[in-house]
Amino acid sequence: MRDRAFASKTPKTLNFTHLTIAMATTSCLQSLRLRARAACSKRFLSSNRTIQEHESIFVTQSVHKNKKWSLTKPLRHGDSVKVGYGARIAASEIIGKRFLDVVKDSAGRDVMLQEPTLSGYITNSERLATPIYPHDCNTMVSLMDINLSRPGEDGALDDTEPFEIFEAGTGMGSLTMHISRAIHAANPALPPSLREALCATSRTRRSSTLLQPDLEPEQAVEFENYRRQRRAILHTIDRKTSHSNNAYKVVRNFSRALYLANIDFHQGSISEFIEARMEQNGGKPFLSRAILDLPSAEQFAEPVVRALHRNATILLFCPSISQVAEFDNWRRTTGMRMTILRVIELPNSTFSGGEFDGSGGKEWSVGTSLVENEDGSTKVVQRMRPKVGDRIAGGGFVAVFRRMQDMDVDADSEASTASDQDATSVDAGSEVEVLEDTPETPDSVENKTQ
Image 1 (tube, one colour):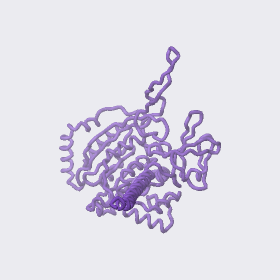
Image 2 (cartoon, helix red, strand yellow):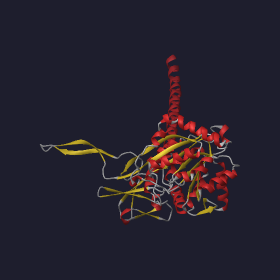
Image 3 (cartoon, helix red, strand yellow):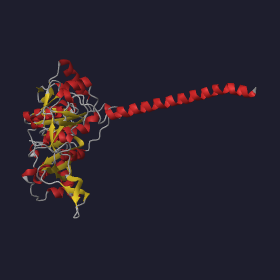
Image 4 (cartoon, one colour):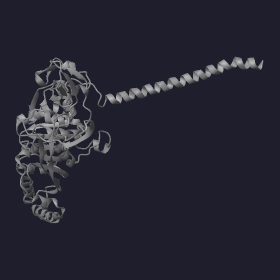
């Protein structure tokens, strides 16, 4: 009887056990699915994503072991993209594809779609002025030392005045884009519909000295409201209208206007812009950083220095060391309340073409080669050598100055303090270095954006 009772209860126990195992298995599978979806979502948000309308991309054609790179204009449905060797591709065949996908051009050749780096985009974009090359831009932005919190991270700073930067000499917009990237996270998110509108409009309008997108009335109001909420602003000015217009287009076409809303493009006089802003601000300084990329910068620097907050820094970019020395001499003779922090020479860099063109450093060729021995056998050996015959670009000098104290001090006291400061700062070395009789750099490495 006991055996029968045990036998009758066993299936129920086994069924309960099977149910428990099945439930645990289902739970594990669901957990794995969620993890897989999360991993996929994270991947799609990074590099493995689809190409969207209004993006500019690299297309690479391979013909007889040679690669031909082309940077496209912003992709729009209904348009065609011109690539190398006289071929074209319909933009609709590219939009929706993923980077590294391969499509056919009108001649039947394979064309790989690649995402442009910021440095590759800048060096391959159309320009009306010689750019500050990306590797030099990175050094200069590093010297500016911009460290801003995201919105809401520091409540004490959210209600303060915005962090404003002034760039004199827009040029093609190379340094402009790098500075905008450095301050981008400090600003609130741009609504997707407004970003789409900024990408779609190719027209601009000018309000006083400010260059703005020509949006529909409702979108223009929304954009103006967004501009008032910005926590970090880059003001960039150029005396040539053609430079400002071209730089605006270059910034707008990169990564669907990603960095455009951080920037106010101005055209006109430096002194007029600064004086108008100082008047609006009740005569108080409003700039936290400034950079002068101008010939004879000392002729335009005084209003900029007066607009700097205490402890703000100003950078000077010059093709030759003698220009830095002239600016430093102007600082001393006029008693400007600045102290020189550092003067550096920017290195030259080699260019080889492609998506990382202009990112800095000296290009090397690393790979393998098949070598034939005396007995006719072959072996694979490593090949490591610097590339020669490529373009050389970059170079120049950068000086960093710090704004010391307010300008409204007694002139005699200011001159006395300046003399004392100059006497005590000789040991720093940088000022002595500026005064050395150093020959100018060759014309081939002079980069002027004006």
